[in-house]
Image (cartoon, rainbow, N blue to C red; front, side, top):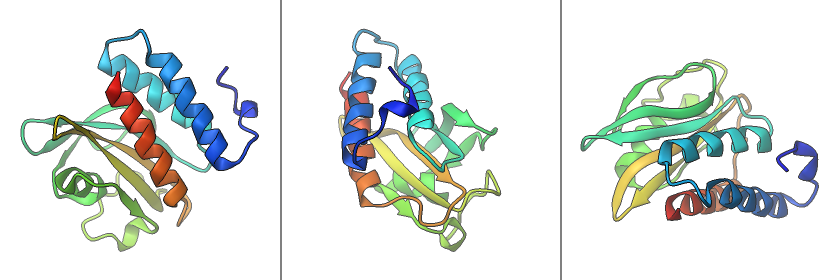
Length: 159
């Protein structure tokens, strides 16, 4: 079901397929951490040219803590407002960064990362975490990624 070979349509069609696969994965599972784990694994298989995908979860009022992910070991704690993840969390809006080295206050957890997209997870008006995806290629992410990754997070939070 989750083979990369299944993704042969347009980017939009492929994203729709991966969102349907996410829905099937989480439909009967109430454990949020288990669902985040499967969601990061699903995106790791689906997305090309990435080197890290995972979640940071809000702790307290203004701290992100490492959650389920796929990739190299990562920074464990990121304050709201710091780096791409902290900025997305503080502003509760998606950050799409073509060149992380040009982003003020970028936190370099993996020196290979060149671009990044971070989607906040907002539930009941509060940021409960972020989806973070890094790529070793500059300008890897675009508006198609933003649109469908935001939908992906909505589905994840609706369960």
